[in-house]
Image (cartoon, rainbow, N blue to C red; front, side):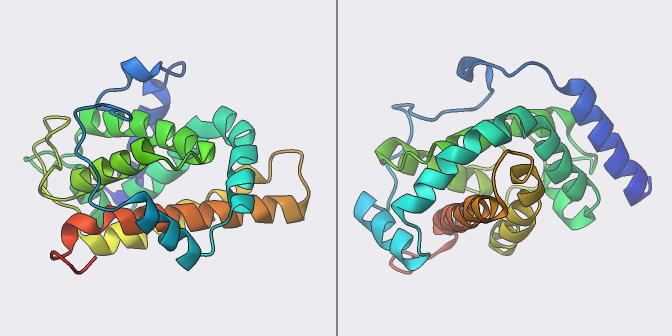
Length: 217
């Protein structure tokens, strides 16, 4: 199957598989706030220092919250864009394959629902201990210590950290046109986009923890 046809098939599957926004209890594998989660190995103080490092401020948090009303009704279209990119990029799609080398539609569907919820959670900009613990859970699900276990997937057991970090740009760059669809000035759209770029970078850094040796993070 050609890359273009495969990307189109993924996009069509995502559209036909989309439904009304599920409640949190209906999102497979979504565990935000669960007492079963491991406590993050980084602290809220570490997070505050990371915020300062990426120049993330309370003003950025304010713009993230303002973006929520703009992005929520467009969440499915945003995921269509991101999934279209992955579907057209074989070395990324590889990590969503099953053990036979075929894209795992069930795995893709479950991840998609959690990805939509991730947009809502990120726009909420609530940086407490529950948020921090869930970032660590997301980190583990990219690394061999936890990938595939939540969904019973059978494909590759780890996404290389270079792609976890490298995806910061396509995720944030493709978000700006969606932010621009609200009733905000160009300056306000830019402020929201800058806030998203900072928080996604910050989260990707947190997700890199399982890939580092003890004491290196």
